[in-house]
Length: 473
Ligand code: SAM
Ligand code: SF4
Image 1 (cartoon, rainbow, N blue to C red):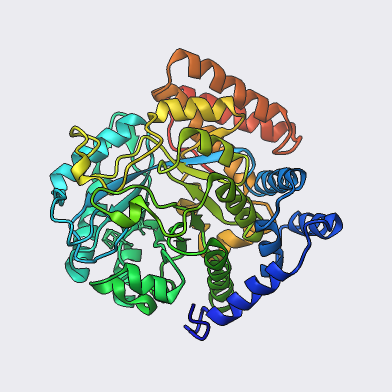
Image 2: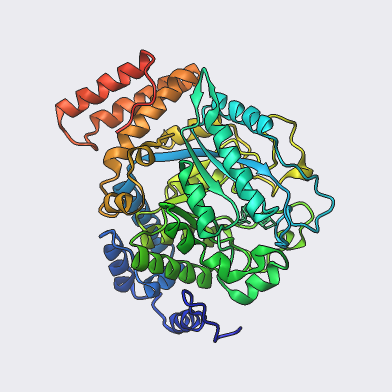
């Protein structure tokens, strides 16, 4: 373990010191200390790194149960009952980097390479719109930085150009290699929502061992991507860690340090945090045997603790995880999920070709099945794109999310977009159950008791039933 590496944002020795001192303390029997952390977390201002470490190490089942309940309460206070849905659209798996955990890495010569043409992107988009999607995450491997950007810009324009009788894509988020500030400027100009990129591991030595070639082998360039993105005019950032590469306690403290750094310097924290765990990837030894595997039990604690530490952020869980775990995770703090996903370029409209996939997916349910389950679990599915289209982005979004005011927009917008889904895509069973959920939410007073407001919501829902689309606050 190199204890002296400093990156400017991440001070490794400081993080190790915190971990070691937390291991030395025996707080497991100190119920009051843990209860105080829960009380602090409910104030929605986050918790300290020391408190994060204490919660991650909890062993007592009652206290772990209380941790989960607190995370659920915090999420409900900030976001209400809505779960945002999206689909990834992989546009290219041609990559010149060498990330040992990924099937797309350049030396994986057995992988079938594919870069979708704009025509193919349009075909995939039509398919996703006709499945009910309104929000896409465009994902690309890194073939060559500059060309890669032009290709991404063209692809974004292609996706936005598609309209079918079921609607159009209203928000595109992007996961692609980090750009220069000028590159981010261009990306920001073409109406993207969140720019997402994962540091994978914040531990420099581990980073070096797992990223052998290409631009991505430059740890600092990737770490500073968020600074360049914000300076280039991108408002909403998605961050994440690839769990399994290194000690999760180190990764979480480092991620929180990165968040703190962004908040301090730019007054903006992450719009979303993602928590991917390494999944088996075609031709990748590391992905079959991750060096620091994270068990389901620890993974659930990680989700709950992140919800308490960064209460305002959208927490994303992808179809890498099983349906059962994803169901549990909704009660622990997850607020956004992908559904009906494919990770091979062209995968929505061609037969799945595993030799083109990035990693294997555990949750293979269709979007309709996922939605039915969300509703059964007491949540309301949302395809909302209201904030981004009303300009509630960056610091403005944070101002509403931090004190827990954003759900006043999230809940009605979730109802409107879910109502659209019920009208355009649902079978009779879901229609019946969905209408019931919507009425219950209106009558439950969670958006206030004002009769005028409730009537206004009902009028708008009726307008949607009559054919109006794209209503949002
Ligand atoms: N090429 C860009 C990059 O690396 O940032 C963006 C696309 S890459 C396909 C998106 C993410 O997939 C990576 O950031 C990584 O965290 C994740 N990933 C790669 N291999 C994975 C695996 N075996 N299991 C789970 N996630 C993986
Ligand atoms: Fe390429 Fe991204 Fe996969 Fe690395 S993680 S090999 S950069 S697609």
